[in-house]
Image (tube, rainbow, N blue to C red; front, side, top):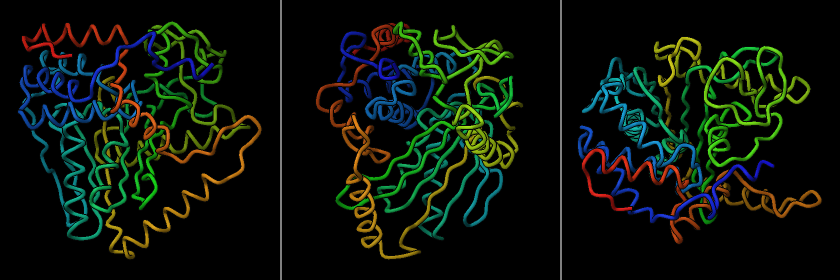
Length: 359
């Protein structure tokens, strides 16, 4: 059932990635962003769609641009340093587009790591950052390890709880390999990202039992709920006590601490929908050991994982980053699938803000 909750050629339209970048950049510029920030915001959204993270991809330009136009987001925006040391910083996202403030915070973390071996930045006054692992992956081209995470308004119940108290609070982690694909982890601390429930509803398919429950009785949900409300909640990663729900719950609280409490911006249950506090880190591998030797050992580890014997019926053992890279190979060659309703919405939004429709 789970594999039905995805885009395919019957419910989506293929668009070249370069055309999506051009279209999204134009829309962002039209609602008041600077040229640089328009390019950044578009790049992050297109990268998510290219990697197959469709819920955090190009369709979000519609809501983000409306928020900018309506004053929910402040544009043009500025990422401002509140406090800083050689290796750390607390910044304000300036109530702007979250994609931009997270990107600029990671640029700052990388610059600190280049000088001092490590850089960490916590971001307050922020909004949705899209695919959180994008920012971790920015470290790869600098031969660094990257980590990123973000908190959000409640959508997930705590282990044994019957009420939404935590965001999906995703974690991203990236480490460079040599000849093998880079390690790329992008995961919610809930059983699933909330956007996948919305995607299932839009394309008219059920969701797997275990993704969410009704509240406060805990009944299983297979019919995708219509939007966010207090009548249902996502489950923490692990779902049940016997299957380790305390682990997903604990990770979600860890994200709340690093993103919300450390920044002072607020933890999940203090946030309004649309508010997000984030945290990013870059680690310079060369401060620990020779980079090529590190990458060679990464290759060995990845190859050994790929060579693991499979359970009956399984094709191969994957390493985090494999599904995203497989999607990238397909989508860069054959176009990025955009859900048909959202494809129409992007084109309508372009026309609405007065820019050429190029997709």
